[in-house]
Amino acid sequence: MSNAVIPPPLGPDDLGPDTSPVAYETGDGVAYVTLNRPEFRNAQNSVMTYSLDAAFRKAVDNADVKVIVLRAAGKHFSAGHDIGTPERDFDTFYPNVATLHWDHTRGDGQPLDSNQRLAREIEVYMGMCRRWREIPKPVIAQVHGACIAGGLMLAWSADFIVASDDAFFSDPVARMGIPGVEYFAHAYVLGARRAKEILFTGARFTAAQAEAWGMVNHVVPRDELEAKVDELVAQMTAMPMQGLFLSKKAVNICEDQMGMRNAMDSVFGWHHYAHAANDADSGDSLGGMDAKSMKQAAEKGQA
Image 1: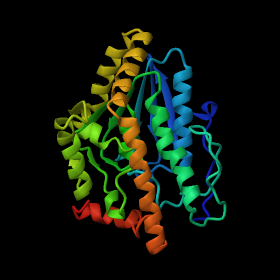
Image 2: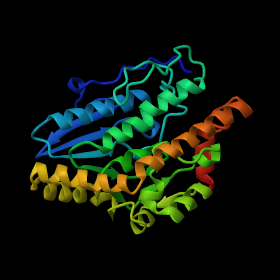
Image 3: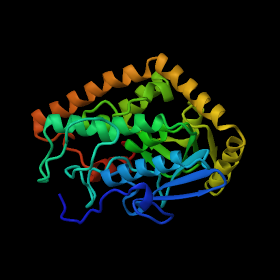
Image 4: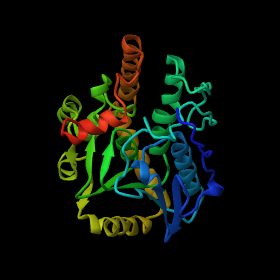
């Protein structure tokens, strides 16, 4: 662990247009929530995750906001979970908001034990994405550049994904011996065979492929991305809030009736078997991979 001083998560009253690690601003019925760690490709540490939750809560509480846009500063949407920046804070305590669970931190910079790791991922990964999926207002993910692993979880918890033509996606964690990221929606957003392909190969797929496979709603040139999102926002903000909320709830219920929630719970168990098996075999729950080695694999076209 680094000795870097890590600020606490932002509360709803701390959020502003230039606030790190999450920026927040509103206008014309929309809240813009911006991932704001561009120097680390918007890798998601806990401070970002809890600040993001505060931003969503602020947008939900604002009666003037009908639609939420999730976007990112810098060159990339998100490189995924923070597994190697100087501000990695897996051992720092922040009060749970997504679940009622025991403290998952150690406070001494040492690796988490299996119970702590399970509690952390139930709260910070699975719990947060499920919480955000149920936001009672439409959420549009505005994606450009890299959307990798944990970045997919963020985008998948939104209702729409609008991507620039330079966006690319990947879930390469099978390289760690792990069956995909914690919020395992793969078979539902991609279809079974495409899900297997991207997991078995770890390969990147393009925005155009994601649109053809049904994961992405629209793909536009990078310089038209904001305008396309604004066009959709304008159409949705003209709708009554009750109609938006109930329509969202209806589609989410259908996904759950098709088994998504139960399937996700089952795969989450295998995910944690993999962490525990890696730890037992090598002493490293990530199977010897880190941010640098994952990035190098991706750059070689191997992930």
